[in-house]
Length: 557
Image (tube, rainbow, N blue to C red; front, side):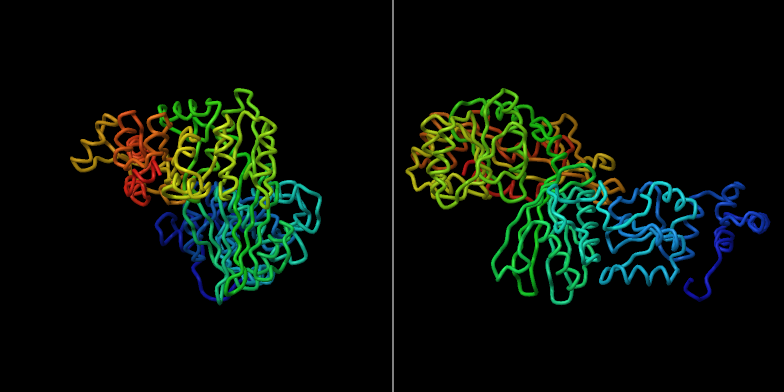
């Protein structure tokens, strides 16, 4: 059943567009009476029109966009509807944004009503699909598609816990949660944020470091979706006003996914942030793939080979500290070194022993780890004073550790404040510091070169010999953003005796900067301009960071 009302027929639209004649239409209609095939397919077979022209005509006929077969719908979305319903109504979910549904007849009100009943509170966005494309899709969708079957490709806990499956008693919430997770992974998002408002729940994905707004959902559905994710992480449904944190391992299309869930009670309910770690993406990560400047890579490798001292990795949230830590540990394992990860590691890496941190007695936990005499210790995030003191004393005694310090500025001061030690022992314990920032990477498929103003051209010509820079454009490959992924900006400074003496003596920062420059140190600003000169990012992206503000303070603490 379709929506009543006058609308142009397909043949009329093609004639009005000047791509079909009256005689050709009559020929097509005559053949249709014999074969009962869709008119569009007949006209294409006769050579009168192209597939693209038919799709454009369907867009005009129904007032919606068309679905391209190049866009393969995720299996998780296909499984949201039973096979019988897909075949009966000739419909198929193809996107989580506004629950995009490909339909042979977007005016089929029975199909739309069934969809609204199944996905209460979710906006529907029909797109038109040709009969031929729909039949092709039917060949690859799973037989007897049902949401509760928990098929192999479905994101689900590795542990055998039926109650933790996203496909639970509240099917609508389970289906939406499952589809949202699949969409986030497909778009390589690092976070999913669900934030309740008075009349709706905001849904956002963190993609390439920036939050991207998705269509909002109804408050009741939002609360149910948050509840489904909490069940997955074995968190209590209610928090009593306290923040909750949980972790879970799931599988998605054969890949291991680590989720870190943080729930917080806010005015209109509970806000949920899910941090996503795709293990397969991490496994492709190496020092060579994330640190593009060869000189900086070599300095990092030299620091990694040191037998003692603290290598401090500093950066704000979402700056890539965990990814750099993973790459450094992967590099260390090449030399057959024994490595212990201390505290909560955000990833798994074969060859690393992971030791828990007792937050009530961190110094005891650390001393027990040091008794194992590891070649290298990894501490993802340093926040406990007792742990800071223990690491300084351990480094002075000959231990080597990579330590993450989550702050944007003055991190050596934070280490001093945490440890409550004098500047000299802290400076003597440090082997080197790494400051990291992330900016969006230009999409290689659509970026274009341009010549900047004369002064900028001359500056960059000394770096890349051409003076040319690149700007973003936007294409289907990058979802029209002009960017795809992120690129790291690194400032790496090894400590020597003179630098330790200057830090311990509270030498003014400009003098430390001058000494580092004399040693050939590549500061954040220099690395950033080099990255732009290589066509990896834009000056506009660099301007959004703090790279050009208080560069010395960020580089040296």
